[in-house]
Length: 334
Image (cartoon, rainbow, N blue to C red; front, side):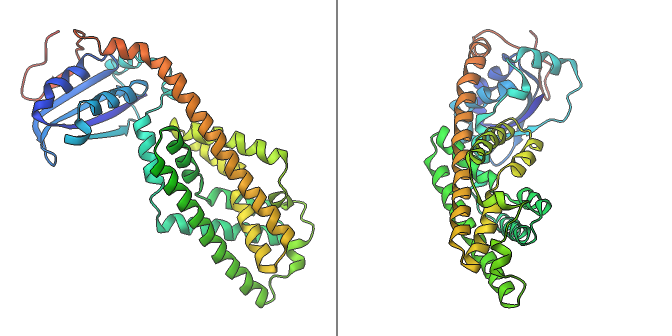
């Protein structure tokens, strides 16, 4: 699995950037377009790089100052059916499924903490669905509410900020989480009060035995186990780009259902329901953060050990690859 790099390189940095790419055996299909980049101005450079090497390469490019004076873009490639790509993949350490591009992970953290109308709308809808699931004792609606809930991105951002030592990401993530859940709780509580006023909701409906959905406000040791396992799976899905696995994480944890039950407990003023829901919500969020942070720390340590030998080899002077083409000039000779 390769990723594509698109760089805008100031002319005075080309003498450092081009050799850095060409001497790395995990980089191929390097194309240089002199003067083609604008805003920022410079030479446009395109290259394919094995995912396992992309993180170290991005760090080297930023050390040269390219992140400040030029531009760096990274995108996933769906297919690279050519021989040089297969050779680049073989030259990279480890497995592409295990490769973590830490600079991209950090950007995902910053992206998650930018609050949006759609994020709040999805959370409100998820909590509302969960409250209906409580009233109707519907396990299907509980699952639907879990899938709609968008909160895991913010939980992952907290873990990312802690591991990469980005306190602003942590602070903004916590702030957005608290504000979004408070807003969703307030909105659904108002709807529940309206439903109670028109006779659709009664205290008996909320406090009655619910064999299919009672678990969402009765936390136990298994609730913590599920939260820890889901935190590991969620972070792995985030760092390795396996977004499909995140659906399973959404279905595993009962943060949104607990919030829906809490809103109903407030509307009918049931202290037992409110206390249990708050405990479930807090337990799930704490378990996700602890497990996610631990997983990121392990990934960071292990991946550094895997990539260090190849990084030293790739940055050794005098090693130049054959995958570079400069537009308007003949191919470089080995």
